[in-house]
Image (cartoon, rainbow, N blue to C red; front, top):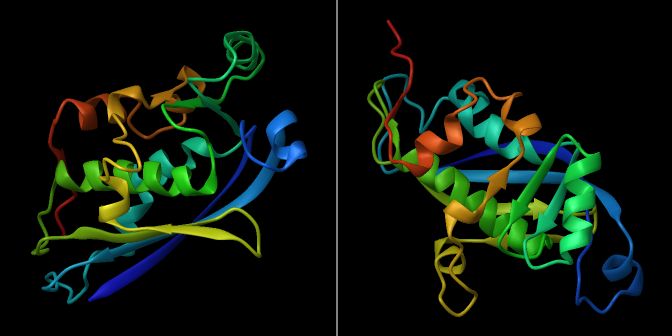
Length: 193
């Protein structure tokens, strides 16, 4: 069974190397919609795949890290990166270009790692990410599945190279959430009594 949760964020970027001149040469923004599809073969104690309320915790914090942020590609011009970090409190640096395709891959990876480190305590079965859809505009989106995220052909994304600014992390419920995920620390869901 598959469930879907919709997230939204406003973000700005430059997409170097693309064919559209405006996109590759000017900072611009989009109103992104992110659809997270989770799947399981069993249901929890409430007969759900996964409680939507639980997705409002760490998962929402990590996805909304991109909200009102500038997303930077670590291979971009160093002067540009430094200026954006100097003048923007909220930024995320990625080891890939901030295209809709790569946003989808990065968000899949982030959610997948979060779920792998989550201790489920309400009778959930094995929950996994089925797919992620990132709508960059109302007319265009990118959809990824695990085969796309962990593809050597598309390039392996090292999660240690996904860097969130202090201004982003301060808005999380747990300021150390990403470090805990990277270090494999267990995140325990609240128990329903």
